Length: 256
Ligand SMILES: [Zn+2]
Image 1 (tube, protein in one colour):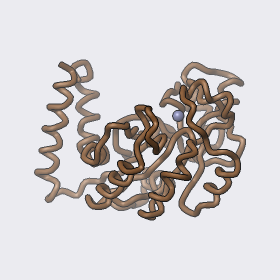
Image 2 (cartoon, helix red, strand yellow; image 1 turned 180 degrees about the horizontal axis):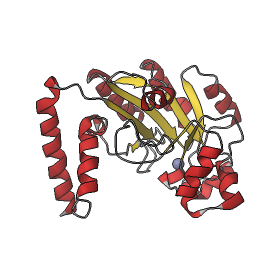
Image 3 (tube, rainbow, N blue to C red; image 1 turned 30 degrees about the vertical axis):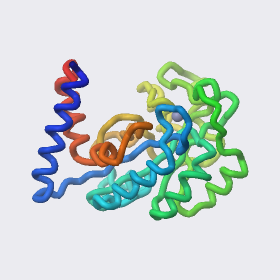
Image 4 (cartoon, rainbow, N blue to C red; image 1 turned 90 degrees about the vertical axis):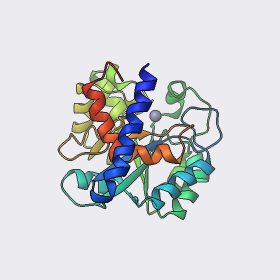
């Protein structure tokens, strides 16, 4: 029942959006969160072919690719293109360099990758055996003019369950990082405070919504892209439909 309501609501909102879009100038700024760009049998792994299709479709639909710095500036009042998408990649998989980066270069698209500090410690939390970027690869990626490296905790721990020095140890990056992504999207008020005090410029959760001005920059929403998401799904994710849907959902949460 919930699934039917979800599909119906989403379809109605998208129809409404397409109908009024020619006369409206919506501010649509969003952040997509990818993981592995590969054929790996993971829910979050997107193939190279599909990733290129996503970027092509976004570009064809008038979206500009912007950096997280642009998003944070927008959140603080600066202007960015009214249809803009920032791309992020979580967990620091090695295929970022071999598969994602060449495609990002085709589109001159900036991106931020979020890596962990302790690969051995993080492996069990990740639950897969995909290779991560090693130190040499990270250095090459760091030198790329459009790629930034953010922190994703030391061991990919559930920060919502930690406190004290253990929490601080997970949050403190072993390198200079401006951005932090909560592992698994898990956080607590305490974790947000520790991230803020640690000196990051902004932090990112996982929530299906557009970035809106006036919200906390320690909990900026990102939309996770999944294996089965096609080009139409991604266009819907970054459109005003996603924000309307998020508002509707918070209003009638128990039904959708
Ligand atoms: Zn992660």
